[in-house]
Length: 254
Picture 1 (cartoon, rainbow, N blue to C red):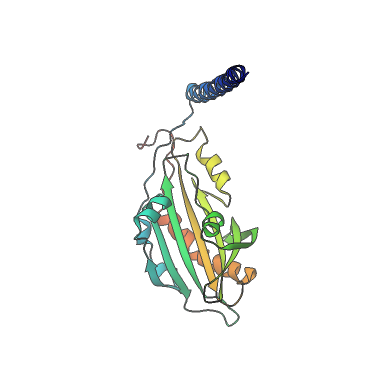
Picture 2: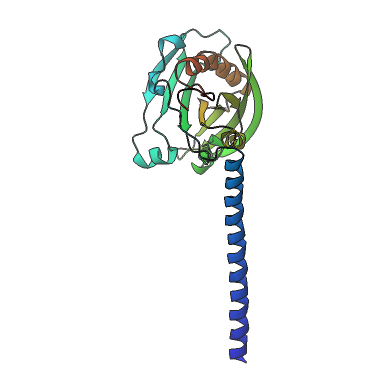
């Protein structure tokens, strides 16, 4: 009886393994077929990289006025830098030197990253990073800001954390992406854009602003107003001096 049961068990395992192998083989064949089809139709699977016009750390501080850079942070931990996936980044503490009387928040951390070439990259988002750091997600909402007449979708994230000394820390984060010159606030939309077979080149950048308060959750409307004002300075500088132009067919870069 034991021998028969073992034979049955082995038979089931073999049939399961064969099924798994056949399924995996079909997936591989399907992927190859899709890649060949895209290639035959003149599409591009592997994207060419586009280097920045100038490194992000050369962002013109004088052009940010009345916002002033108080501190430039660097990521010295090699593991963290590897996880970030790029050496093109800035993380600057910026303060408004000429605030309005009703401005409750005048300081934010500006965090900009840049990636190019690999369409398989999954963009980092604070929704995941903060949760991994032990923070509690309090609220997320999608908003739109107007920057020199252009509508830019922004994702707003509110998180908090209880500290060991019994106090709390609160952050309100606003972020958006520029993928091949198009602004969006969803990382899956970024991947969709980068994997467009009609595109030969691919890049994306994440622009993120973080406001901290040790007493209460920063007011969303006030933070959004601050993000808008900072974006009116930062976005045009990135577009003019840093983000690359997408080459057109016939361009010397092709």
